[in-house]
Length: 460
Picture (cartoon, helix red, strand yellow):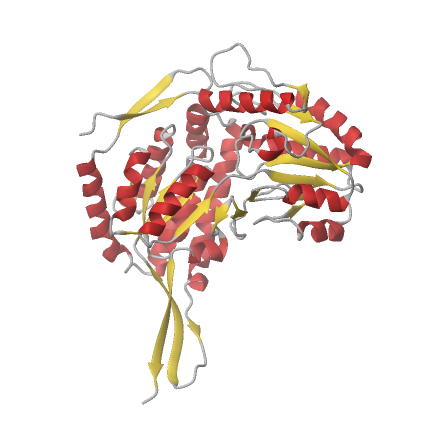
């Protein structure tokens, strides 16, 4: 056995919750061998059997949603009700693939010269390795695993080291639903083991949600092994407020888009780009509402902001805020580390944020809103696209057609009008530029790790 451990620590009070043994190299090989044995059997399951298991998984998530949300709150600090919401989108994704599997797997017929039959079929490729983050411990796993399993692939999960209890519970849910060990397998290992796992022949695809740095490493390792990868990385998503917007509604959308999950979302609305004609009024109302947000125990009722997931990430965020202020941003509220145990950081608003400021150019992964003033619509689009990332985006406007027209000019994988970037099972999720490549969810997520194969039968 390995003598290393994964430690779960409650970020609200720094108390150690539990420790979990990591796998040794030999134990990892045993798990990979188990996966190698399980794959040929699992891929032969009928679509009906796969769908039955996915429905069972969705039902289990719904039945256990309180336990799941409580554990997420303990391990990474997500407010309880937001954890419940995470379970709901997760079960909806599992049901989407269960309900739509026959259509997703449907063979396409093509009329091709010289052929009796020419078909495009979809086959599984093998094991898909998911390298998962801590900020949405359940949803991120469901997002990669359910389409892969629906298509006949098997899954290996390397979860974030600070949410091992969530990883264990998620594994139990999959196993209870009928995706036994070898079909869905948790690998409690450190990041130093990932390259060896990617290089194993049973692994035929890799997906990662995390930092740009981690994404580059995994992309390099997967590319060297000639294996496809899907990356969902960082974001400095814009929320553009046009001059015709209802200001009160725009403020509410900005708060929802920026502060959900204590601001720890890749697709959060991190730059609030507001037309100068309404910027002063917008900022005033935003500051008032942010000051009223409740930061408290994530299991308490009515909490808006929980602790950040780890102290080191909280300290990194505070350093970014301090550098932003030195570079000319104005601190309107928050911005100070409270004198209490845990990884707390108050909801913070920075105004007078301009191009070149750390609050404009860097991803602030926590509860900090940066207000940027735009001269006009064209300038707002220019500011939004002045970014090395391109994950989500939001446009707030009374005129829906205008909002859509502006959204189509944004360099992003997802654009929402009058709603913050929101995951839906039916819509593809993913970004461009430094936010990664490939798509998850919808039929596009389903196809990410399928062999889209030509079958041609010639005439005699």
